[in-house]
Length: 317
Image 1 (cartoon, rainbow, N blue to C red):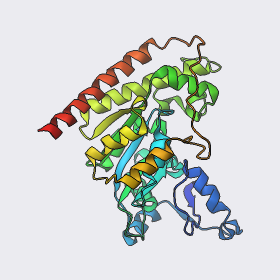
Image 2 (image 1 turned 30 degrees about the horizontal axis):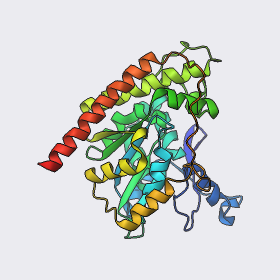
Image 3 (image 1 turned 90 degrees about the vertical axis):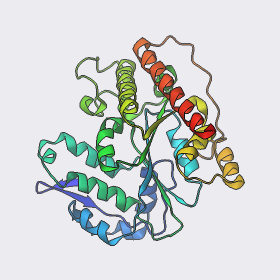
Image 4 (image 1 turned 45 degrees about the horizontal axis):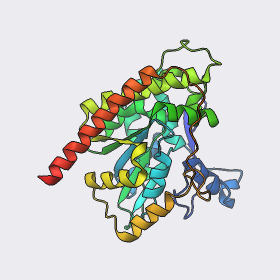
């Protein structure tokens, strides 16, 4: 998406038969960019309003689950294992969806009555399927999209939201090794991350990330207190157990073959599928103050345990 003559435009790429199976959607875009048709000088361009017109002429799979997460908590591996089922379409951190969400920070878009319809149309276009075998659509969001969750609930009142989280010290250590966009001050605006501006030294990466985590945990607590279709999952459960719990909410047939594929995929790195996964040893280096983050994390664990208890009680009944 880009701006031209004070109007927002979107460029289109031809994907041929390329499916969305890579760990991140950007990787699939790169594959499509290598096709000769996408290298031509003249490229298809449209304004955003055409999205709502086009969706009326396609068959699209309705979102089955939105996957929200705090980052470094297994969301990439989860989406990869879900993608092993031929009946599933996986959208993993689609840049265009992020672009549309960020338009909410532009005043003139707040009064655009077509905004919600355009966002929903974009998701429907990515969920397009001419293959009758495709039955479920899983949308993995960027971590900062937690703060847009009320908007997603407004658009999808009956869709399940899976909320992934992890211990704050483990997330912080992972970010210290390789920082994501939200872990670097200034790359994403503080308002989008849900933190107060100018409260952290711009050179204090860890302090910034701790504030982001506190904001994420607080959002998850607020969401689960008011939304019966949101359920929590902890990285420590393991992906195979999380998928088993997911299957208790939605109709996924985990047969012997699919279960074997899931197990084998979990043996490899989520972001680098050709590398065997190795849990890195815990760094004994003293971390900054995570007291508030751990208090919020503990509260989330209590809510998750209560959710599991309710599910088990319903099964036994």
